[in-house]
Image (cartoon, rainbow, N blue to C red; front, side):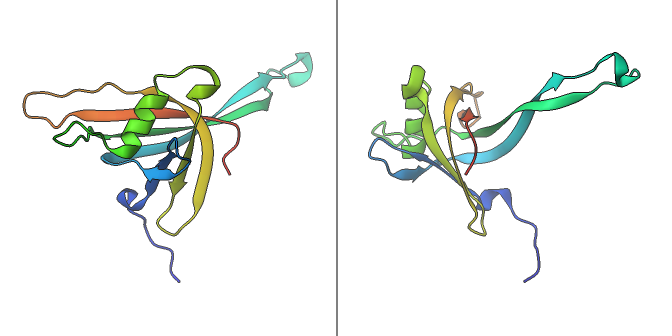
Length: 140
């Protein structure tokens, strides 16, 4: 099969709810699954003026953005509601389980904490919603 370009909208982002069921996070129109690292400086007098390092730590973040979803009765999108609830907790209770799935079916599962994005908009805007999930541990 040929390798093809994948549309971002074809990915699935899910969060595990209090019943231990993964639910879709709705309203998303942008996401970034990024990485980072922390280096230990190993530069010494024998490095001849060149910086040297070892990778000491790696980390990932999932940043999602989109639209605030709520029905006329005030019931929120199930996935957004779980993420908003996690964003209000501290300690071990603030860690949730997430799943990111490619259109081809590759699944990446991880745990992480939530930092909510600002909610808002202008007169003629749809209300924005989003969050940054900082991964704790490795991505499976």
